[in-house]
Image (cartoon, helix red, strand yellow):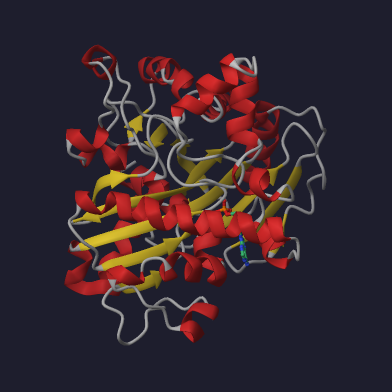
Amino acid sequence: MSGVFLTLNAGSSSLKFAVFERDTTSAVPMISGKITGIGENAVFYARDSQGRALGADLPETLDASASHEQVIAMLLPWLENHQSFGSLVAVGHRVVHGGQNFTKPTRISDAVLQQLQTLSPLAPLHQPHNIAAIHAVAHWQPDLPQIACFDTSFHRTQDPLAQAFALPRDLTDEGILRYGFHGLSYDYIASVLPDHLGPEAEGRVMVAHLGNGASICAMKGRKSRATSMGFTALDGLMMGTRCGALDPGVVLYLMQAKAMDAPEIQDLLYNKSGLLGVSGISNDVQVLQDSADPHAADAIALFCYRAASTLAGLLPSIGGLDALVFTAGIGENSALIRQGICDRLAWLGVKLDAGANAANATRIDAADSRVKTLVLPTNEELTVANACRSFAF
Ligand code: AMP
């Protein structure tokens, strides 16, 4: 059996994993899966490259108190014992924050790990879990090469203007910048754009990564020129439970007039706002689409309005729009939200073909649309596996 790469994507309460063969360029992993509900009621899913369920030999639910490290400690030997696993060559990690210095995938050493730890305050809900996954692998096999792939790296091609806040210069120099996120997803989409757009892939393209976390990236020459997330993954679009861009005066008001402290405000803005907060029902678009409650419709309408206005705000970075790509859970599956966003972009020459949109087709623009509009499934795991390949283990 040939060598394999394992990719790990550790979120706040979930862990996604995928196993790719070293010597093929197949976009389909040999094994993939996720563990959700870590810390509450962890549930394990795994499937093979044919989509067949695996993991019957694992407990259906894991101990409520199992930490990320314990979950990984259970997963790694299970994978190793799996007959199609092969010999593990390297582990690639999605790491949310690479700061200003990590502009490409990086082999993890003690020194790198120390630097990643200093970035934790910039992504407190994500970075510590990414680091925990790295520690768990190192504990299991200390000599196994590990590669960190950063969600921020793809955006380091931006003009400094697109990365700056209008804050005093010393704060900018200290690193209070617009970093941007979802870079592994944008990197993958940039890599497949030529397959769908030919030479126009190099033109002015907006990619809307709309999942539970959501952002938009303005690309030209398939490079990031501006993006809606900023210093943290809280900025920009309205999301599942995050508020997106907010007048900072609201935060001051919450502190001063409502005496809320930082953890309370953090919880409000990250976990109780967005689609969940506005609807009062759910952060799940499928639930909201099926609900007759007018607050569900309000939440979807605000999501679409905010997405269209944010996209419009990114246009100066690329000077117009040739193509628009929707990706991630909502972008790939919700015809209603794509239509709601595109209706508000009609003035830019965006016009959908209703049938193609309803079918989640790859090309969804109408014949007379000026802007080519696509639905492309993202594949962050493949970006990580390809980064491992680039190290030629
Ligand atoms: P992600 O974070 O990329 O996994 O995306 C999660 C979001 O995608 C959730 O809001 C889901 O409701 C949404 N989603 C997934 N499948 C569908 C679907 N078939 N129709 C509408 N929304 C969907």
